[in-house]
Length: 514
Image 1 (cartoon, rainbow, N blue to C red):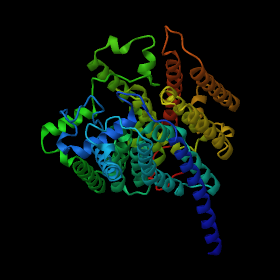
Image 2: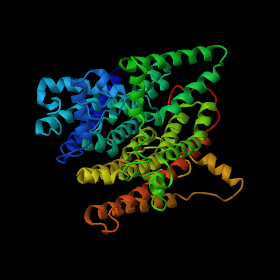
Image 3: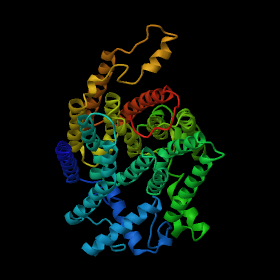
Image 4: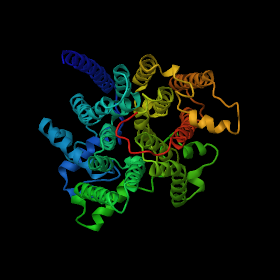
C-alpha cells in the first residue's frame, strides 16, 4: 500500500512537471503577435473572435447569422455552428465585466490593447486547460505500457507545435473542438457509447470541420451495432444512439429552429460555396494541381463541389468499409487519420489549419508508431509556415518544432523504431512477398528519407524567412511549401491506409487500447 502511495506521488509529480512545461510553452507563444495584429481594416482571426463576442452580446439570437445594419456579414460574419456562438457569448459576458469597450457595438471594431490581448489569450488558455488537456491526460492514463513511455507520450502530445502555434499564436479555439472530439473517442474507449456520441455531437456543433471525423464515428458505432445483431440488442443500441444524437443537435440548435429561414441561413453560413475550392496556399491536391492547371478557372464552382466530393468519398471509402466490418479501436484511430487526411487533401473549401484535424488522431498513435507519427506531425506544422510567417510567428515556430523533434527523439526513441515491426508493416510485407519474394524496407532507407525531408523543410524555412521571391513569382515560396507538404500527405495517406486495411480480422470489441 505504501509503495502504491509512493508510486502515485511520483507519478503525479511527473504529470505536474509535464503540465507546467506545456502550459509555460503555451503562454510563452501567446506573448507573440496574433493574426492580423495592427493590420486594418479586416485585421485577422483575433478580431473575428472578438467581433463574434460583440455580435452575440449586443444582438438577439435571431440576428446572429443574418446580414443587418448592425451585423455586416462581410466583416467577419459568424460562420461557425451555434456552440461557438454560445462560447463567444460567455466570453463576452466576462469581457463586459472587465471592460465594456471591448465588445461595444460598432465602436469596438478593431479594438486592440495590451489588456485586451491578455484577456483574449487567457480565454484560449483556459479553454485548452478545461477541455483538451484533461482529455489527453485521461487517454494517456488508460494506455497500456510502461509508465515512462506513457509519460513521454503525454509530454510529446502536449507539446505538439501545430496546435500550440495556431491556438496560442495565430489565435483560434481548436483545442475546444478537438478536445470534445477526444472526449467522444474516450467514450468509445470506455464503452460509454452514449457519452461518446454526445461529446462528438458537441464537437461537430462547435466547428463544422469536425465532419472530417464524423464518418469514422458513424462507421464504428454502426459496425458495433451490426455485430450485436440488428434484430435485438444491436437495434436497441442503434436507436439509443440515434435519439441521443437528435436530442444533442436539437439542444444546440434550439434557438435557430424557430423557422425554416433561420435554420437554412445558419447552414448557408456554415457551408458557403462561393468561397472557392481552397483558400490561400494550402498543402492539398487542388492547390498543388493549380500550379499546372488553374482548377478554379477551368471548372465552375458547382463542378468543383461535385468533383471534390466524389474524389474525397472514393479515397475514404476503403477505410470506412473496413471499420464498419471490423470495428476495433485501433482501426477507429486509423480511420480517423485516413478520413481526415482525405478531406484535407481532396475536399472543398480547405484551410491550411484543417491539417490539425488529421494531426489529432496521429498524436494518439504517437506511442505506437513514433517514427511515422513524428514525421507527419513535423510536416503538418511545416505546412502552415506561410500563415505563421504572415503572423510574425517564425521564432516560436522554429523553437517549438526543434523542441518537438528533440523530445520525440529522446523520450520515444522515434528514430530507432524503423523496422517493419516498428512501422507495423509486417502483414503488408508478407502480402507483397507473395509476388516479390525478397521485398523488404531497409531501416536505413526510412531514416534517409526522413533526414532528407527534414533538410528540405529547414532549407525551405530559411529561404522563406531570408529571401525575397522573384517579382514575377511572388507566391513561389508558399507554393513550394504547399507542394512539398501535399506530396508528404499523399504518402502518409497511403501508409495509414495500408496499416488499416492490413489490420487483423475482427474478433470482439476492444475495451482497451493496445
